[in-house]
Image: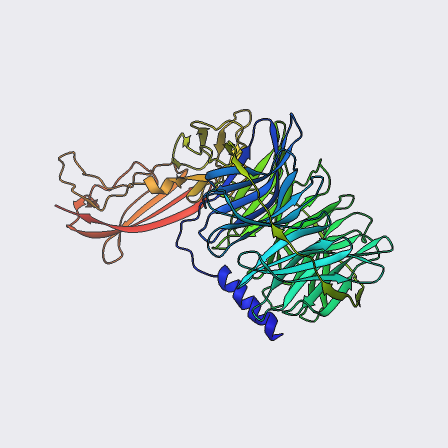
Length: 596
């Protein structure tokens, strides 16, 4: 367990570093006229830039070329480049951040010869070096940066493949992992501070696929191996550390109701299952597409299988027990997200990239979200995934580790491409006017948005208000007792709200603090000036000894400063006012100075 703890500390120190930058959230779409852009990977570089990898496909010729975008932290496109030749069909399938700020890309090719490997690319989009297999069998599926280089994982025909390289991509060792009468494919590996390597993948036997987790020594030998599955199509693609120092693997399982579901499996450092849960909807084939540790649990992306999904690009967060805290979904009318890829930014913001299918074709969706999965000033839609415990049989299997295969130096050309950028998240106009800001009980006010943004869904909140029949935009307040806030919300999003305050009538009541009953016609009488009418009214005035000197039930009748026809002396007098309206009885008390 010591080794697992050390690696957890190493990773989460990165997650918890303070970030003095202002947070800038966005949703952007990048597209190429006449070409489809398919997204496979996203990563933040050491300098903060954002890299997106995938493939562009020409609608006219069908040519497929690897594509790479470099963007600033706020989502501004710096450049886009394509890689490959006219005879190769290439794709970038995984990315990592090189320690010197450059980009490390995993490359797949579909040419006649067939190639797979890695390439280091500088911040101008120029390959610095490339290492490829020389035949069509081996395939690299992931790359993980270590203290001194990289760990690559994939497969060579029926054997799992792990390669450890130095910082220049030169192999230190290469291991193939096999088991009798099976086919093994490794999808992701990483190395802890002691040099131990953990990996996940799938094992196929007798037509069924199970998820597997391996622990390898620093030299590539197998320390232990575990097999998990339901005797159906199960696979594990991702592995990370949960915040409680255990391993968390993600993938999909077909063994629940004959539909693929997203699958999370939590095990301890020796491969013992702590819990196993699925995430999905009945009748929907879906799977986890990426998985990242997150403070208090983990985050993952999820989408449906196939090209016509309804879920779109899902982004979800769970706690350490796998309970779903929230799920957000980028599936707006006319735009569906496919194959969402997720990475964590330096301040625990979330970066998601996906293929965005619209009526005009497929482009690259890139969004930066907060810890609620939203991109202020916009909120993503929610989705209700069903979470279920999944009984998962586990077994020990004994693979064999043998010599792997070598890669060789290869050339890889690149060229620029001109992308179009569209901003998908803009703050709508929220300015509105109200016909009055101070009301009496039973009165009404009119609301009006000054310049509504086209396509925005607005809604109002007015506590205690009743919409006036047949008069849109007019609300009445029959029982107004206190000040309240009128709230305008756009697109049901908490980040797009504007409020104005409506005050109750008492705020405009005027009660003098002094009067001068000298007969000059100015301030000769004392009486409260009430903003709203009061059906029941009683004013009483007392001298300093508590003797009643004046009372009235008429709102406009005031005290002239006399008692029984004689002038009262200059002094401070106490008044008590009781009124009654639809709100009930209200009693107020104060004092007034008589000056002569």
